[in-house]
Image 1 (cartoon, one colour):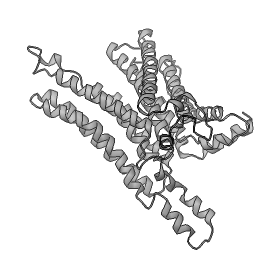
Image 2 (cartoon, rainbow, N blue to C red; image 1 turned 90 degrees about the vertical axis):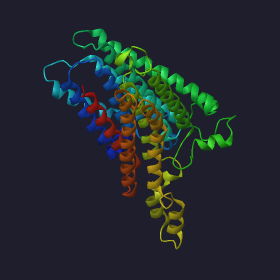
Image 3 (cartoon, rainbow, N blue to C red; image 1 turned 60 degrees about the horizontal axis):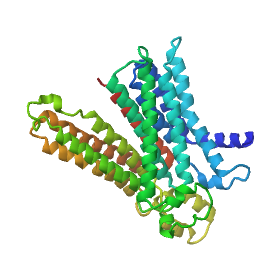
Image 4 (cartoon, rainbow, N blue to C red; image 1 turned 30 degrees about the vertical axis):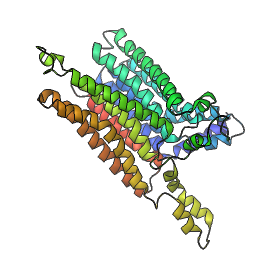
Length: 418
């Protein structure tokens, strides 16, 4: 890894709007963490923020360029490049935290949790891309695994309600819970991928080689490169199964714990609504945002149209033929909108059913309906963003970073509620 190569990678990233968006979001999150105060649940919020901004900064890691490097192994170059991109939000958060804290010491537990979550997220993206996952698949699996760790840390902090300043075990216990959740989610994802996606050989042989490993059917290997529109790779298919199963379990638990079905229980038997809301939000971000913005498959070729046209020259029928082969003519904005709406429908019907069944108890019926309404609002907002960005020719990584910046803003605003 020569200094010249490092300067080249940093120069490329400095020209990406996604890098500067991640820097600004990281700075805002670092400032918010300092002025909020040392709470144990802040560890979970720090993990979630770090995961979102790290995935936004890494974006679509160009592994194709990594294959062409002769001075360093492709896997090592991808790992180093991913860490360089993830350093943008880390620098922003550290600078803002130092400016906001002044003479006061910043709590160590949230900072360590944020750094660990960012590093684990970059590792998940690099490993997934090395296993021939598409850019949207890699981002989805990194968000899912990181979201599980953040949810575990947040649940620990909210359950015990300890402050980092008064009890060191509160903050570091949340860090341990987040790490355990990350490891468990990574193991479940690998097992589910090997079981449902039929990618045993791809997982066993993490390589950037050009030819598919032996034993992988041609149809299955092609699915890892060019997906239907909108793009749904094998990893996202696995995550959809896990999302559906978890939301059905949440619906069953909500219906079982209805206070009007438990004799003499009163409202004390009612389950809290925030775990279900958190679960739905994490799954929606994992499934919808990468699929709607990164747009793997033929729909992603629209971004190459100007390059193709500039290289075609003044050919008589070249531009028309090339333009006809791109996805822009067959409805890139439409597919982006569909990719934003379908996950909301998948995740929204269990809370809708739970709310309607529990409608006899207003206090128990309104929270699931509010979750459905929140998913609908998120789907419409993401569809509007992706359609507008696709029509204006915005880069896929830029739309991805903007969508995740809105997700971070929503999470920090929700964390400030009582």
